[in-house]
Image (cartoon, rainbow, N blue to C red; front, top):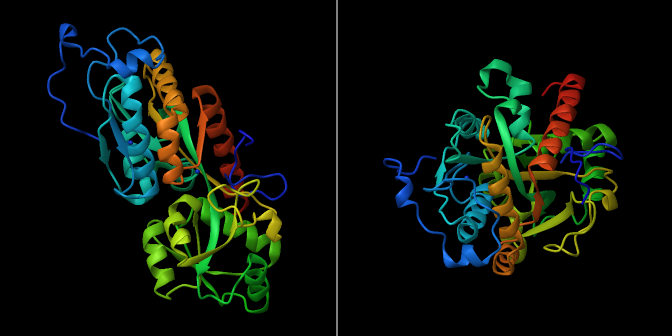
Length: 344
């Protein structure tokens, strides 16, 4: 997959997919827990001096059970054997993730609080809301990207629409007739919808929801006609055949939904990818960042973890600190251009 990710592209532009647990007084150096046998034999990178000596609290900016929470808890559970410590997850939902993102940025820089970040919404909020958001991209140090999740257009299994092309044609004939559930302004979904409307002259009636789950409830209940979401988050309904996925926003067909065409194959020349990764607050020791990135890389390469990730339909996509940082900066620049062109 091309590592220069942007979010929602036509032929050139890509719309591209874990807080406080109880920590008592800091243990003395003599009390530092010995690495587990698994960690000692897993080829873990050399640990920075006296790190880690206690659990690393991990903030997730969304509710338990969602795509980000599931990815974080799954990855970090398996990361423990390589890190020699645990990663307790604390959920801080609200304001579309902005509350949790702010908590990560304002955390101590000692390496014991990190968190999940979700581009592009993570970088969109400061662009859109300015000083109302108490963080900016420069307040973070990227550690690693873990998942890149393609978008998907889907309908109920009993919907008359069999393809995305049919949806587009209906919207051209009857603008605004079809209601579509999405995750709100600034999300990958919102940007993909804007691109589709601009490129195809189609017009949806957009209904925002706080995440994929309530949108899915509305879809299955007949309150909306279509939903756009991340593919991994609708995988269980896809397997149950309660929905029909019309198209996915990857560069090519995806393993979890092998028969589903891409946006481009469906006449919509775009790619939609939502990234999920880990970052710490600016000022965190670079040696700690590199150590955690190496732990995560080994975790994503672990055969047992890879089998679990496949069961959960997690689209793994590792990027280390440098590459991830470049990707986030590119995303920020593209989102600024999109906002200047047409504020949302």
